[in-house]
Amino acid sequence: MAEPAERLMTVAEFLRWDDGTDRRHELVGGRPVMMAPPSRVHGALALAIGAELRARLAPPCLPQVEAGIVFPHDDFDFFVADMAVSCAPPADELWCPEPVLLVEVLSESTRAHDLGVKLPAYRRLPSVRHILLVETREVRIEHWRREGEGWHVRDVGPGGVVVLEDLGVRLEVDALYRDLPVGGSGEVPS
Image (cartoon, rainbow, N blue to C red; front, side, top):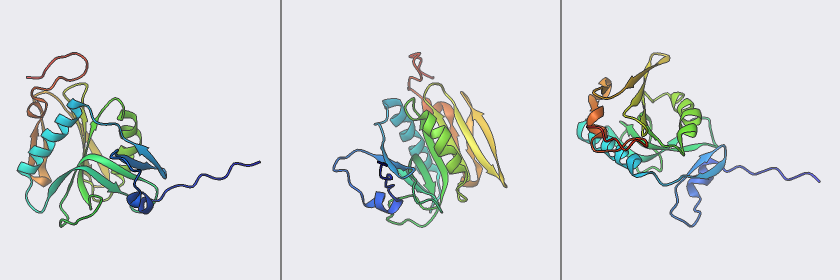
């Protein structure tokens, strides 16, 4: 006897869904996927980036942590970015409208998904102009910047600055990682 086809959840259903816990989920291919709690370094990096963005962005641009990301013409994926910036007028939505910057802090448990699934999807969003992939194993940020129809990628390491020129923001990499142990070495960046 044939197995019944699996029923996939739509984004609209996902946004109404409540699993009865306070756990965070993403919708991937129509299936809710639980997200693991972030590590201490992961959370500290997201907080540092958010604080710098909040201090430097001009209104109406605002950063948002744990930002819901919807995709046009895709009814089965709803991702949660570690950080997003939108310059759209503030609204009380369950997602970040028209994100211009997306940030993912790469953890061991999320690295493959962030790089293999989220990054290609983010690059297809027409409003996105910058994507930052922030390492937790070393002091390094990979900055993806939209240039016309393509993307330019730049690795920024110790002593470097991530420049989001069109947003009027400069992020000093050393300041973001200050006092944080990276990787398993126990070293703390100065």
